[in-house]
Every structure is written in structure tokens, then in C-alpha cells.
Length: 195
Image (cartoon, rainbow, N blue to C red; front, side, top):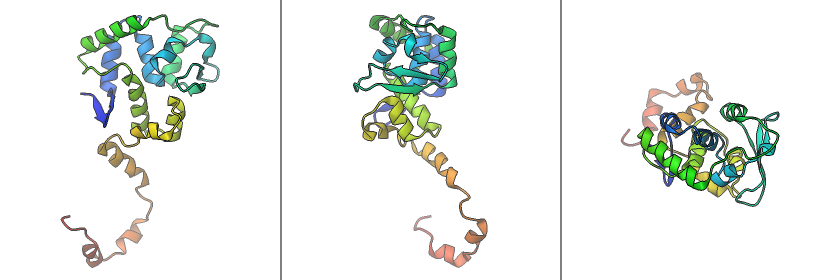
């Protein structure tokens, strides 16, 4: 089942693997790139090899929706994909039409038995998985090319289970001796109702 928080639907790690395995050979690289970079479909369709910088592990997006160019660092998975595809000095990275992408995505979803969510949600998948793994909000804003942090904030708190897990990062700030200095009576006095 796909996870969602508000209107943000994204693939779980298990669903990512299933849909990638079910994708056609011509579509699989495009799908992997979309999931591992968070780049918009149109930006990927226009991606040229001259904008793929494997020496510095970045891709340069020049035709961004916002009108501003941006650099996106490549994860190890994304870098390995580009190495497997080329690299080439120039030319389009992906030779897929809009119709081919729609058809191949639909087939991949059907063949994977994954609940259908729109292809644009590969971007949500990237952002959500980045946050689940404690990625920084400012970095995410830059990677996604959002002009305002408000757009990125939809990924701030995906679900209570992730929030509960992330709060553990501040465990141990207070030495146990300080906590033990409270008497049992003080603890009872400070106990919240119904706890």
C-alpha cells in the first residue's frame, strides 16, 4: 500500500523495487532516474548528456519549471544509472516520448500490482524517502527547485511513526543522574492526567 500524508502520495521501498522490476527495458532507466533525483518528467525528457557531470556527481537542470536553473547532486544509485547508460559527450539522455512514458508507466504499475499513483509522484517518492531518511529541508527545497519553503514543507512530517523515530536523535541529552534526582513524589506531582 502506498503511503500518504495529506495529498502527498509516494511509493514505499518495496513498491519502488516492484515497479522498477515490472518496467520495460526502455522505460526502466527513466523511472529509476525520476525516483532517485526527484527531477520533473519534462526536465528528464530534456536532459542532455552535456548537463550530466559525473566528475562532480551532479546534473544541471536548465529548463526548470521555475525558470531558474539548478544543480542536483547525484546519489550513488543515480550516478550508477548514468554510468550504465553512457556517458556520452552530448545528446539526449532519454529517447522517450510523452505517450511512451505514459503507456510504459501504466504497464509497469499493472504488472507490479502496486496501487496506481500518478507518475509525477515519483517526485514525491524522492522527496518523501529523502525526509524519511532524515534529509535536510533546505537541501530538499533546492533539489526540488521550489521557490518557497512552503511548497517543500508538505514533506516535513510524513507520519507520527517517522516523527517518533526522529525524536530519538535527542535522547541522552540529559545525564540520567539529573533525571534520577527527582523523587518518586515529584514524578507523581508532574504526571499528566490520564497517563
